[in-house]
Length: 377
Image 1: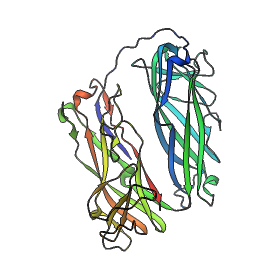
Image 2: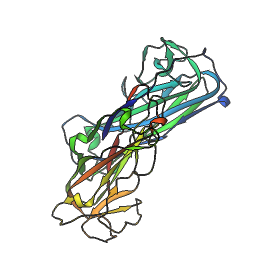
Image 3: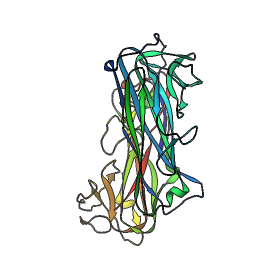
Image 4: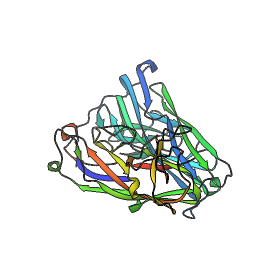
């Protein structure tokens, strides 16, 4: 699901110092998410005849901090699948894009390098991180040094059609290592995807896109949060047979929500990495229907083998970790009913942070995004 909006952000002058190497004790390399989970994939139903299926996109941030100015070249060590993609377990590949690089507080371009100290073969504000290559902050094509470097990473994974034809449930994992050579630091990341034989497909109306339009600063509060007018979508889940399932949602902008609860999702950040706000997806059982049930009630659980709540007609927000499901028995704590075709209205509520907490000198987009996952029970 994508949300879009225009606000304002700032540009500032760039200033840098010469390249250098640092002791490993002087530097720290961190990833916001060392494990990227692409969720549970449904193998039994194909919605198209493509040779491979897109497993989705996951994002994380990378930060390298040193106490002295240092060459901040970064390499990614992983098995190559092609010149542009990395190997992801059996019959899978993934691609990594790096963007929004900031060196010592200033936005910078990135250069793609084959080895430390070599001139970049390509420079841009965002790059596809190719196997056997590194990236470095550049200005006018010249590599730079710094004390702090951060960037956003977007990883997209695919599985070939043959890879979707396994009979049993299986988990794929692939590992890679980010290597800050001059800083003497490295960090491992794990990519994970799960495949199961159950066959339910979720779909959102309007392709899952919610557009809140364009606002000016006159529409927003300077010192308080501003709730935006709610928007509506329809959520449909179609299964090839009656199935017990639950819903959760992954935050594709993890860490950017100003109020980061289990049911609130980030809207991205402005040019200075200020958090713009958050959004939530709210479901009302009164608007839900399934198969030949006269009425549906919602029930939720902490997940896995945890107990289910007493089923009620109260609205509820879709959460990141807490399972949400439906039953036709009011007050029941037996868990979800077996459902084949499910429909419900979804209310999308977004909140913008106070303007005095944002950088308002240039337009920016609300960039909220989430991925709804079906949990088979």
